[in-house]
Image (cartoon, rainbow, N blue to C red):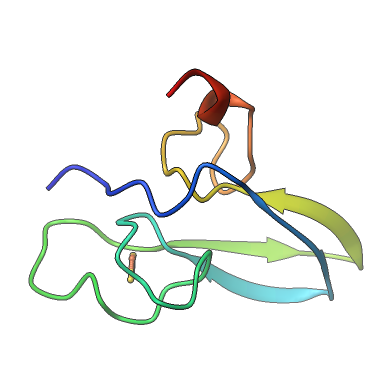
Length: 77
Ligand code: FES
């Protein structure tokens, strides 16, 4: 499947150190994180780690080339 554009606005959030699963399919109702809605599709979430607290912009359009982080490509969709 092609990823669905969940939103053209990234989620700006301060993440604590830890492990996260970014939704790559765009179907999750917990954007930008995976909620298991990809099951039955040929697409999987992206696991990423944050080593220390930091403010990030997580992609919601699912077209970024720097997943899971926003690279600004949503502005050209
Ligand atoms: Fe989208 Fe899991 S719900 S990758």
